[in-house]
Amino acid sequence: RWQEVIVLLSGQVSDPLPLLTLLTEQKDDLFRRRLALAVESLAEVRMDARGALAPMIDHVTEDVVSTWLRYETRGVSAVVSHLTRALSALGSLGGRVEKAPLLHWLHSRLREVNPDVRAGIVEALGRVGEHCTHEAALLSALTTSLRDEDVLVRVKAVEALRRAGTAASPHPDILSALMQTAIQDQEGLVRMSAKQTLRQWQEMFTHPPNELLAFLNTQA
Image 1 (cartoon, helix red, strand yellow):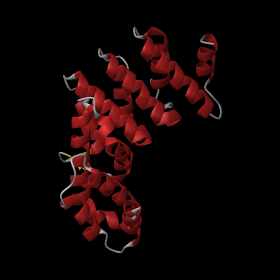
Image 2 (cartoon, rainbow, N blue to C red; image 1 turned 30 degrees about the vertical axis):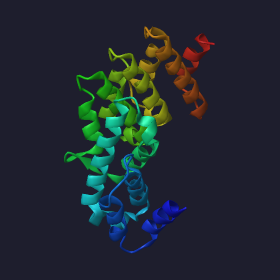
Image 3 (cartoon, helix red, strand yellow; image 1 turned 60 degrees about the vertical axis):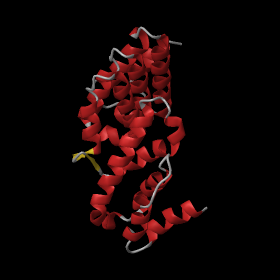
Image 4 (cartoon, rainbow, N blue to C red; image 1 turned 45 degrees about the vertical axis):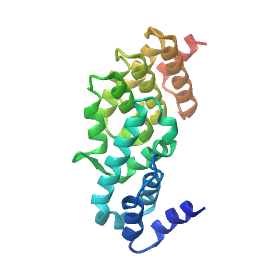
């Protein structure tokens, strides 16, 4: 397909700027498919060539995040699944939103009054995945989101930690917070999701922590 050819070319040509400019400046469709393709293409660009593309990376990052959040907070992100997939690649590009690094910007928005926005931000962090595990403050914030007053935020916080995987587990509070959520959250859906995450983590560990094994034994 022609999209795959463009992504491949972006990593092969000596100067990918003209190709990427076509993707970002030409008229896009309603669901921003060219924008998603631009992210995929940027992710293929050689590391030594990305410095010159910093302004474009920032522009694309801000455009993807704002567009995706608009659909996500309305509950219709399924129609922009290509942008959802692009969020993972954004985590590796080092782009900025409103002049702040992407992860720092997402962190700052976790305090939004609107629970739909908070849920969307937590979902975005989950899609960024393991990139979050390098930011201790972000992991602490996700742990706090496990106690959010809104059930959807709590569900998405559990899911975000599941996607982050066991790389998040060394954080001192996360394992205990997930276990607490699994038995104390007032919503059965949240409890069930937390237990599933913990079971998945158990399978991913080479040597599961004793406290995790003990907890799961009590839940058998």
